Image (cartoon, rainbow over all chains, first blue to last red; front, side, top):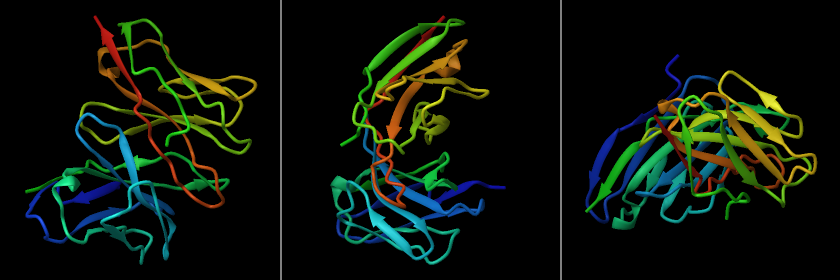
Length: 115
Length: 112
């Protein structure tokens, strides 16, 4: 049982490049989310999903796309990287109880630098 | 914006109880209160959550006031390893969503 797996752990991009951050969970959780955390700051929600085929925007969605074709995977795509997207990205998953997430399990993060 | 208010920092002596407060005065009737913590640069760790009754697990206790406008997370015997940022979260209201927004949290420092 690996939990939530994020790849890569570190990445350096040039401005304007695109890439996909991978997130996979093996717990059959319906709920998955992506957060970013800038240095010295709290986490901010980018996008979330309540099940395969269903996604929605969080508080900072601009510049990012997501899809949820399977229960296990929830990739985050950076369309055209900008220095402002330099951050640590966390993926999380949870099962639901009474329509609310029971408790998120977080991945170990992807540290992204855009130069 | 987060729907919760927490003090930015607190200290606690090792072995003593750490009581972390959270205000959530606009909480709706069906919204749960969640607590997470983040140790250094690791991914956040789920601690506990509750609706209106007090809750206890192996990590902590959660005390929710009767009007549900505030809560307190209690670490009964704090250790140095409990030094972390603690986040109190209320889910953004809406049907069938998991829009969970973290605020700035409380930085708890456990001192020897």
